[in-house]
Image 1 (cartoon, rainbow, N blue to C red):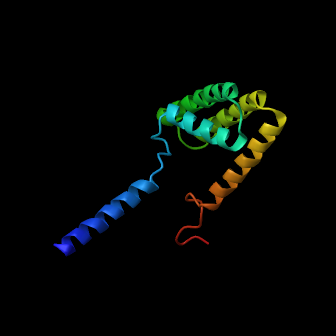
Image 2: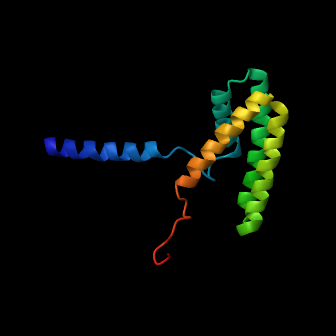
Image 3: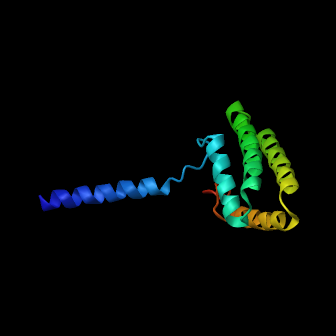
Length: 132
């Protein structure tokens, strides 16, 4: 009986750890959830007020919805990358209009650090087997 409880406990811990590692990111996330996540993250790091939060939420939602349309359209390759980059550029322009100079500079710095972290994770861009 003790062994059975112990085995069940290890299985339960393994399942919980697997669930904890899934943070809801990715293309399965709804545009609304993505906008809330982005806005909360920005608010946490920049500390803006409630009225600005609403405006930023609207911008994040608009661009999350546009990104979702591109994901769902089935466009591939350079065309998809170009459209996604255009959306990011337009979003940055909208955010620049809303944030103060200091807030936008801080946001750009945070964004650059996050992009550098992403590049270091690989994402399939490393050398594969048989490549030099």
